Image 1 (tube, protein in one colour):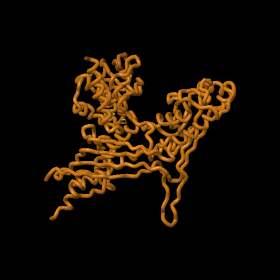
Image 2 (tube, helix red, strand yellow):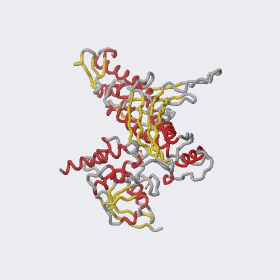
Image 3 (cartoon, helix red, strand yellow):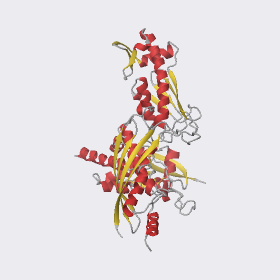
Image 4 (cartoon, chains in turn purple, orange):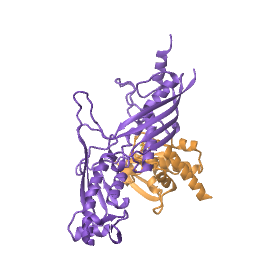
Length: 334
Length: 160
Ligand code: FES
Ligand code: FES
C-alpha cells in the first residue's frame, strides 16, 4: 500500500458553436442622438463577458472608444434572434453579427459626415477616439457626436445597421457520414500530475499544465480568467462532480448544493495556463470560442495520470476513490 | 399572522421594518429593504453567497432570523464603498479579475473582510481557510485568493 505518482497527457480539438440545423445569431446596432452606440442582442451574458466583448467589437468596427458602446442583451421577446450562449459560440457567432451590423452603421455615419464636410464618404476615416477625419487632411474633421446630432435633427438619417451570422446546416454525406459541424476549432493540451493512494483510492492533483489555442484573445485578461476557472472545472468534472453517482440507479444522487461535490479553495492544484493565439479565418477579429473547451483536456489527462499511477483505466466519470479501488480489486491476482 | 417589528443599522443607516415572524435576514434584506448584495444560493447554509457581517462577525443571512437582529449593526457588500471610492477588497477583486458571474462575490468579500479585520496580514492558508465556506462556480478560486492577499498587502502599506 502506497502513495503512487502518475502523469497523464491529453489533447483536444473543440468546435466553436454547434450546428444542429443552422447556427444563426443576429444583431442590431444604432446610434443615440449624441453618438453613443447601442448593440441589441438576444445573447445572454451570464458571467462570460459577452457585454464587454461585444462592446469592444462594435467599438473597434465603428471607430469609437469602447465606453461609447452600450450592449443590451437577452430579451428574447424583443431582441434579434440568437441561438444562445452555449457551445462556446457567443463571441464567434454574435461577434460576427455585431461586426456586420456595425459596418453598416459606420457606413451611414460616414455618409452623414461626408455631407457635413462636403467630401466623399470614401475619403473619411475614424481616429478611434470619436472623430471622423479626412484622409490626408486631418485638420478637416468632425466629431461623431456632431455627426449623430446632424443625422437625428438635420438630415433625418438613422445611423444603424443589421448584422447576421449563419453557419448553414451541414448534412452528412451519404457514403461516408462525414459532415461539417463547425467551421472553427479551438485546441488544448493538458499535462496533469497526480498522486493516488492505492489504499484509499484518493487522488490528489499536484499540477495541471495547460496550453490553449483559442484564436485571437480579444480581451486577454478575460480569456486568462476563463481558462483558469475552466481548468479548475475540468479537474472538478474529472474527479468530483456528479448528480448520478450510480446511474441509472438514483441512490446517493445529490439533491442540493450540500451533496454536490466540487473542489474548494483548499484543494487547488498548481495550475499553469499558456495561451497560443492563432487567429481564426472566420472569427470576429480572429477569435475562436475559449468557453467550454477549456474545461475538457484535464479530464482525459487525469484519467491517464491515474492509469500511469496505479495501472487501472477508469472510463466512467467522476474518477472517485470507490471506482479506483474497485478497479484495483478487479485487477488484483487472486 | 401578526407582523413583528425589527430594527437594526444597515451599513450605518437605521432600518425599521415589520416582518412576518420567521423571515430570514436574507429575505428581509433583499425583498423588504432592497439590498440585493447578499445572494441566495442554497438557502441552507452551504454556499456562503448570503454572507453578511453582524456586529463584526461573519453570518449566513439565510440561516439568521431577521427578528434576532434587533439592535445589531449589519454590514453588507453594498455598504463598503465610501463616497464612490471602492473598498480595497472590491478594488482588488476587480484588478485580479476575481469575479465572473459575480454571484459568489459579495459573500466572498464579506468573508475576506472579516478575515482582514481580525488578521490584517494573513497567510495564504489563512485566506483559504476563511474562504472555505464560500462556493464559487466560475473562477477556480485562485484569482479570489490572490485578490484577498493583494488587498491585505495594500492595507498594510496604507497602515505603514
Ligand atoms: S444562501 Fe446562505 S449559505 Fe447559501
Ligand atoms: S464568480 Fe461566478 S460563482 Fe464565483
